[in-house]
Amino acid sequence: MRLRYAILAGLEEFGPISQAELSRRLGVDRGDLVKALNELEAEGMAARSADPSDRRRNSLQLTPDGATALIRLDALVGSAQTRLLAPLSSDEREQLNSLLQRLLDHHDGHNRP
Amino acid sequence: MRLRYAILAGLEEFGPISQAELSRRLGVDRGDLVKALNELEAEGMAARSADPSDRRRNSLQLTPDGATALIRLDALVGSAQTRLLAPLSSDEREQLNSLLQRLLDHHDGHNRP
DNA sequence: CAGATATCAGGTTGACTGACATTC
DNA sequence: CGAATGTCAGTCCACCTGATATCT
Image 1 (spheres, rainbow over the protein chains, first blue to last red):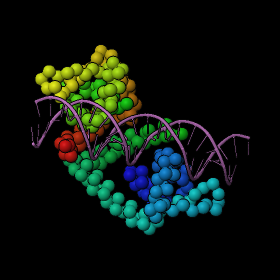
Image 2 (cartoon, rainbow over the protein chains, first blue to last red):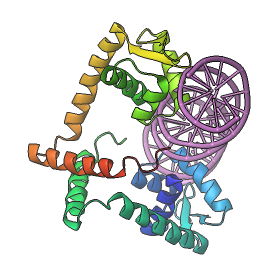
Image 3 (tube, chains in turn blue, purple, cyan, brown):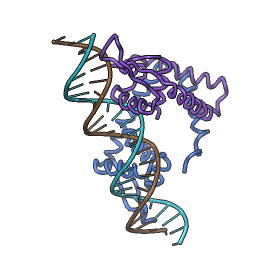
Image 4 (cartoon, protein in one colour):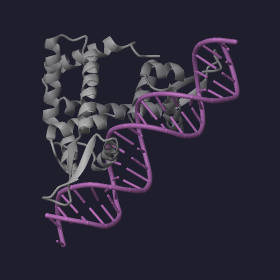
């Protein structure tokens, strides 16, 4: 489920994109991306079209149904996050976010083939 | 692997204990605990013995081999943690730990059957 | 040719559900 | 009796490895 959400969010954020490029940006395995895209495409939430500039590539896009589903998922994630962070003040949430972001930044690039 | 580590650490921390009680303290499913304990017992790292006061229960204990393995795993976890937290100062590590601990404390007890 | 891309098959882990027999 | 305990079977998702065909 979190794979589907990441994909939908990635498609919205990165616009038309190839599968390999999306898998790199999301840090998701290409094979798993294929399986998830098969489902999302069958459900009408994502679309594969041929990339004229490189026939190896699929050009991925979010469909209107996919965008609608993403809005619903964003709301769910938002409310879950609010509940998760309930015990922290605004300042503390920023502190936590900043600390975690620094860990991500520092380790980004290490161990990525 | 992290299940095995949690179990070994739990056995050391909570001494002789039943499977149901250990699964509750660790927040681990009872069925999964059975599978992991079968392996750990076969490898001589944990031992099941009958609880005389309640014949439904197994009394679980860490074996010497299990304690040795735990020491090795602790070292691995420690070094991984050091690498993970490398970009943070001592104070910042304490801040992070405190913030996360408060999240855990606040949500502990919610959603636990 | 080497390299990138998309796809598929398969294996492993941990999370979870449901059923069951035994014991309290 | 209801409730707890240990066990087993099986599903689900994500992680990961490899192999293959196509295209640059």
